[in-house]
Length: 359
Image (tube, rainbow, N blue to C red; front, side, top):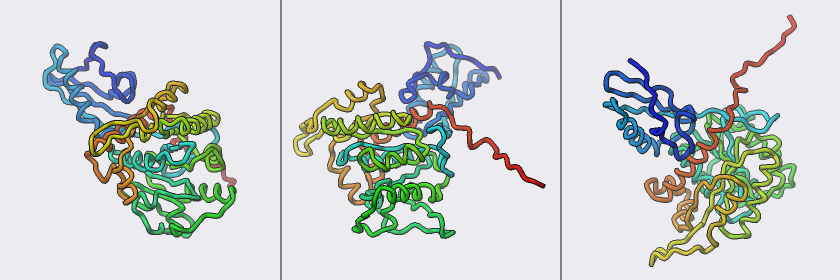
């Protein structure tokens, strides 16, 4: 048995990590036995929908090296905890928290949040979703859940499970038509309880669907919740972009990394004639990404099926798993998770707690 190193010109640049796999420390082992080459790859992000493509490209690249015979590529993933704001305690059972914000209502943020969560799950991660909109929770309807969570000890809540997502929302605890006539302090307390008193179970990514704006809920999130990264949802429309920029700047001020921008309703394709039209303008999301030097994670069309499926409690990723829309959501999910995987790891959970006792 021997080990070999392939020439740099043969290096494969991963489109999600935007670097070669060696620099990303994703190549765990290369073995050569006779003419057989075995490569073990461990990604820091879930990528079930990408494995076949990656395997094929690596096999093609390695096979072109002189002396290489049969090529076997083993691809796995390992999701680590990554650092959040300083001085904020981690949430038991949760490795990483991703906040999804828009600054403005009506841009499809909740729809994007639930489909992003489902796409991460489809790619192989254990995912939770917290509906942080106390006044207007959307996730119970979108996930098709109309029951109350259990409590084994009378103090904590068990997350409800829908399409393999662990979910929690104030909407699970009240009637759908009951208005929440609460002042700010009550809202922030409710959010903290929903987050901290839920028995999350080995969650790789907890998606937090934020309400519009930059008010009490967002401030609580920045000060008391260990947010690993944020995603901004906007439409190409100038009015939406103005508020999205406020949301992005808010995260910058509280030192939460912005993982990128998702442009929703970017284009409309007529179901009758196929004509494509930029109803809300074009290029707004990319322009904002360029202005603030953040990634453009992807664009989603204005498509009736997205609205219909979420209204029926079966979002696009599960309603039509082989559709182009699901493919886009999965591509965005891989970009989000890959971007996060490049951040510094959080090793705080690995350190033992020191307890001093007087005997």
